[in-house]
Length: 614
Image 1: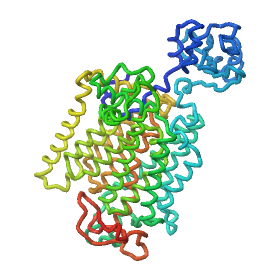
Image 2: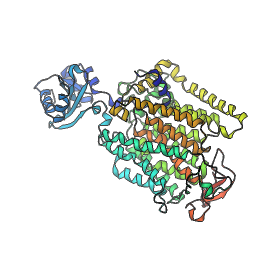
Image 3: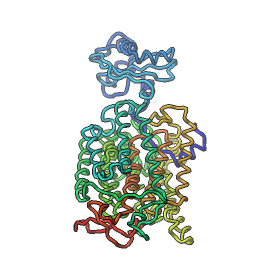
């Protein structure tokens, strides 16, 4: 058990991880089985749960190999001999694994720990899998093909998406543009994912930290306070210098915005079709449907979950409530089947995120930036990865982006901040910066009222969404099943859990994330939507750096924010020089865009079809 202080910090910095239904230790499954051999043969045929078989040289009914034979095969493997040498007194046991396979598990003395696992084909005696270390308990670390996202991991889908994502933002005139590097870093998570898909977590885990650290640094760099683009000297090269730094070149789109709009439509159709015909629902999406059924039926939301998703109740109540409309429309059979409700929810969450990206870009700088941001969302492979896994992580991005879209309204910011924080708890870290957004632009006498409206809306929303949970569960039960469970759960998907011995460093990183979240709420920074998105991206990334369990599904949490920061920084300082004019858009004077938009100049497409301004 960790200290109470760390549990308090966890309320602000904890990223709720996908439940471990698929990664439950096989030791627990094997020790619970007590049926006779005759009965267990039928049970193994109907289930992949391992069923113990006594040592014997006689094959069970319907099997070619005996328990003694599979034990001998496993014991002869060099990998198993090596791990058993580290644990004197270890022993093995044979188990039926489905209708055509065997599992041999080796345990340390007195069965305290499972130290090795081997999967053997019954018909041929061939060794199919052999695992040690974390990959025994964490089946998601075994690199099973298509376990997350099915064919989206195929190179013929992933690599073209990477090219499509990068292509419109390439500026041949500035090959060494920092934006090029930024986009390549966002794509560099693919290298880590490739190692993960090949079951090499000792390479995949550390490779996630360089891009996270780089992106955190970039967000903090972009947060330097800059003059508004609509003031004196706006559009001049002097006006594009920030705090004594170098000028920011205007954003140049290699592909005209109308073409990007068609690209958005095409890629959106591709994503939805792929989800319908070739996607799987991981335990995260399954948990959403189970929780929605409990909410709709008026049952206790926390505790007493199905054995195939025992810890699916580790999220905030908003996650499960968001699935209620889909469960009511599409129903649930009570088993982990195709789960059409989870598919529908994931598609709607993705559509909402796409719409919010467009609307934010339109609000900041006009429809062209909106199209560019929407295109970035549908072309980025990791947002498709989340969609094809039918996870609930895009929902987090939706609430955060919605808080930005309605940033001019303190009550709206408070409402969406509460919804984001009570879906998965890590976004609670954004509450301070969202609470103080725009306060410095208000007269002193109006600041307490704005802050009070935010806090009131946050509290009322939190109270409302917690009613279904608190009607049947105590606060202690909810805390134990969510925050406490996650804070005490080990995971090999971070450097903290993979290597061990880094507890003090991890604590320092978590505390630094809390300090950053509080500091960005009061330190002067860019006062516009781009500045708010940049600050939120920095906080989310800093939070993820310190969590015990990190996964690629968390990238969409900050991806939209980061793209708004990166593209908005360029679009926010348009050049009046003819040589720097961005293809596909022009600068026109007009009234300031509401909610802290960057300056009085609006970006419009020359086409009459896109003549409306943002």
